[in-house]
Amino acid sequence: MNRVDKIIIAADRDAAGEALAEEIARRVGRAKCWKLELPAEVNDVTDLLRTSGSEAVVSAVEAAEPFPLSGIYSATDYAPELSEIYEKGVGSGMSTGIPTLDELFTIAEGQLSVITGLPSSGKSEFVDQLMINLAKNHSWKFAIASFENPPKIHLAKLLEKAVGKPFFEGSRARMTRSEVSEGMKFINDHFVFIESKDGTMPTVSLLIDKAKQACLRLGCRGLVIDPYNMLDMDTEREHVAISKMLSEVTSYCKSSGMHCFFVAHPAKMRPRDDGTYPIVGGQHVSSSSAWHAKADLGITVHRGDMGVEIHCWKCRFKWIGSQGMVRLAYDVPTGRYYDSEMAEKSVKKEALSAPPHWMDDWE
Image 1 (cartoon, rainbow, N blue to C red):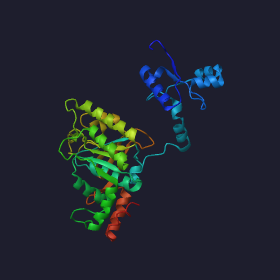
Image 2 (cartoon, rainbow, N blue to C red):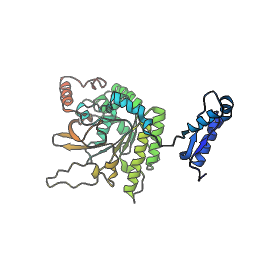
Image 3 (cartoon, rainbow, N blue to C red):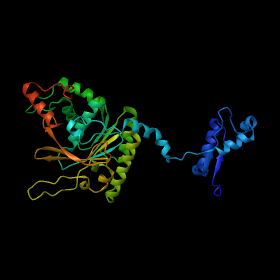
Image 4 (tube, one colour):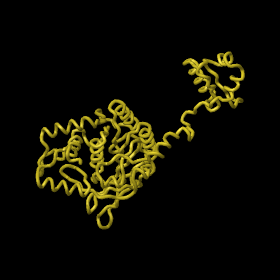
């Protein structure tokens, strides 16, 4: 077989014949196999010879088509998709639910977002806000692996963003029992939690397996891993382990259409002479440059003098967004992020009356 450059397989048209053709191609190599395409009215080459003669057999042999190669496609295989974007355009990702932020970036299926920032800068709160907005506005469901937030505490934070009132007692009127109940229905419909209750550190492979289950059973379209350093990996060759981990997550996102938000802490930063800290980016994320290289969307949450700064340091596709920075307002009692205009409206509403109903406050 090694001396033969081309093998034409003329199997029967039934299931057994198809299985035989596949097995021959597997053994001798699909790259050198061609398949005889028979007319619909005949079952095998003998039928073709009997009904149409030898010239028909010769024509069929000359017209044999190469076996499709696994994982290798020609440009014409993508022609329908190309035609669609020619007619309709590429479009954009899903709205973040914050108009000012949408001018910077949107959220697309099948991509990896890396969220970083200095400690206590609000990275996790920001991801929570994106999740709530995507769930409310686009019916996205999420699987959450949040290792630093016990589920009961995380639920309280999500409820605050959904209801628009504090969960705990404080300076502002907290949400009522009925609002907790109503908010929990929304949270329960859109969020599930991945938790290792035996105390062991999960691997990224385990998380991907859980995400697959959540996708298939529940229709989850988003995965949150917060933070990465709680995963079990090879610390002796950490940069290699991180690169491999991100490749696995990226591959899964593309194959499943899920969007993964990966929260990653930066390496320890030294303050400037004036006591302030520099704005971190993808190259500052701990232990590996792969964070910058493999992210589709790279975001930094930074506390600035004029509000919370959201920096986009990488956007792989221009139809998703661009590099730049926007400032958002942050409401401490509810953990909500707003653009400046929405924050002003919220303050005015609260000054005049009780906080708005949680489902009406998303206009």
